[in-house]
Length: 471
Ligand code: 5AD
Ligand code: SF4
Image (cartoon, rainbow, N blue to C red; front, top):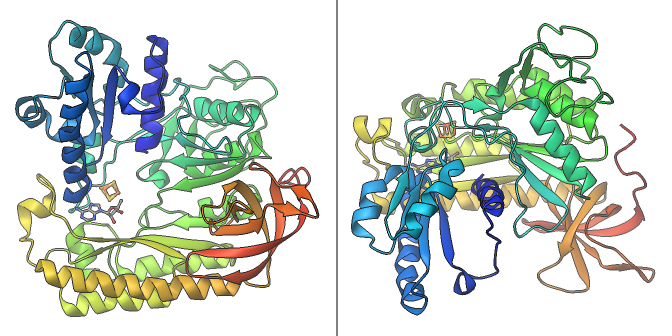
């Protein structure tokens, strides 16, 4: 999400005459987009801010700004303690960057960390930075209303709001026109995407056009046959994008187990261009810990959602987030996490030690009482369990035919390219097939020949013609 936010910032600044350069050494303005999710993330940024002193010593005119969640959380501290910082801007205030920069230009410090209930940067077309020209992010909602006890996001990114589906579909169409082959729809909790629009026919709607395909399932209260539903939920939105862009691969992140509906699973199963992959953070396998985490589900509920995914899409890959050593976590709780991992058999997981964040429910209510060393031991066991699970899942793909979208040249060998299958696993394929050079952006059929815990090797058997248009 931060990558995509930076692309929105680049778009706002492009209108103000700025262009992106390759390195901080060449820049007149350096903006650091920051994350507060764990203490370690903030520590990394504070180090980076200190490095800016050296740059400023060499380039007296250089201005330095801090954007994003740390700007929101640490505004005074940054302005008072970090003299090198000229500008502090929170995640909802990027439109004011041109005015703030004007102020900075006169030698003053500038700050705007106001959070908004409406801002979605809906109509701003992001300037794609560092792009491979194949895959892109599209933000569909901002903020979060969930208040998980460990999480700082509701404090730094504010209330949840959903972006107008017209502008989302338009952005996806524009990406197709520019040659992109895959989008990832982004939100902190995509399952609670909800947009209520006025009953304007799509053909007359802002940014719409008369040839727009119509969603099948429809939201509640379709006003007429040529109009968007009045109320669009996440399943409706997925279907709209799938229909409007039949050749585009669609992914999304992040789902929330308490809100993930069967309607979403039905839409995923119906459209071949929606990837068979769900990132469904569990956080813990213990119902007691989940309750303290304020996650809104218990282990049995999570396992039922998992079963539903498998019922709708037996070939769907599932990944997760896990926190080791949350407040009050006992050895038995930890063992329950390991047993849940074993039961589910995740394809992939992001795994973290619990890091107390100021202002959160957990920081106010529960002591951070699992010793650091114990957190480390539990995390190591979780990582080990995941390695085995990933290796097993990946080995299960060997012998199968997969459709792979090529993204770029393999880091290990210029003779190989890497891409992803629908399940989001990395697939390495030869760059040349019978003298024909494969290129990023191509869809190929590959027979999976071998696997590791982190990637698959494939033999290309053909190029997919009109890849996903079979929808
Ligand atoms: N400590 C450790 N991990 C955290 N996450 C969020 N907040 C914390 C925290 N305070 C993890 C969760 C979330 C992912 C994005 O980051 O697992 O799903
Ligand atoms: Fe944080 Fe929970 Fe919201 Fe995710 S759903 S951003 S973990 S509060």
